[in-house]
Length: 318
Image (cartoon, rainbow, N blue to C red):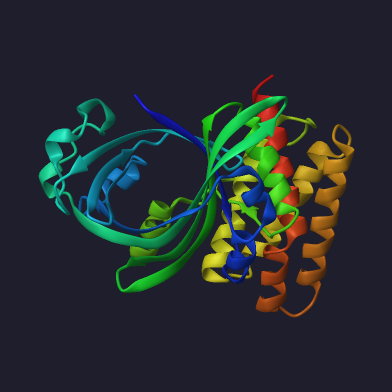
């Protein structure tokens, strides 16, 4: 049963060209490929697949149609790991006989599956041979530029995905930090499918995770993980709906993360302190969307969140 391990990063739309021209990409790849990807996602009228965190789509690349099923999997600090099945199909219609029963939620009425939304984008991809800890790691890096279309509304797609093909997962974070030093990148927890559901039915979007019940102990990976997930969700939701009330909650997460890591990880604690101060200064003055966006898309914030995610991954490896 195939699975994928990937790190997803959001990229400001106005930085796409800068990213595509980074010398680092040419240094570790033999070339670049571009494809136009047209995707239709399917669900029941009451979104039973979405409720079980299962995504089902048909992707068109040229004259080829690919049916894909992705399961819930796991996500930790922006690192996604999930099971995935793919089949070539004849056209734009689902071929239900190909869906493995063990991967689907029980009692899903397959005959009720219909088109829910579309994600259409241009994909630029590089196959990288990246050196890490004395070994060569194979990484597929893609830049996706386009839009999600649902219920007559649109949401831009501007993101980077680093997928591990061969080697150590730590190489994804190592490469991502090098990229983030040059272009503003921010760890992302939201998939294209989730963006589609968010547009289609905002009331059914994945909720913001709650604060940890206790933050008494410092350097606690479980607490840090919960705070990172909440912070990422708040920032992504703010970028989507510009609700200024989300920012004090994000500041609370930054403060909690600083308390957790300041003593055990001084350099990371300092980064968190600086980002907390930056956000605090934005909250002290009259709300200004442009200034908040500049902070949200700053390289300093991106590097801080990446290092947080990397620390969390390292803790999970013992």
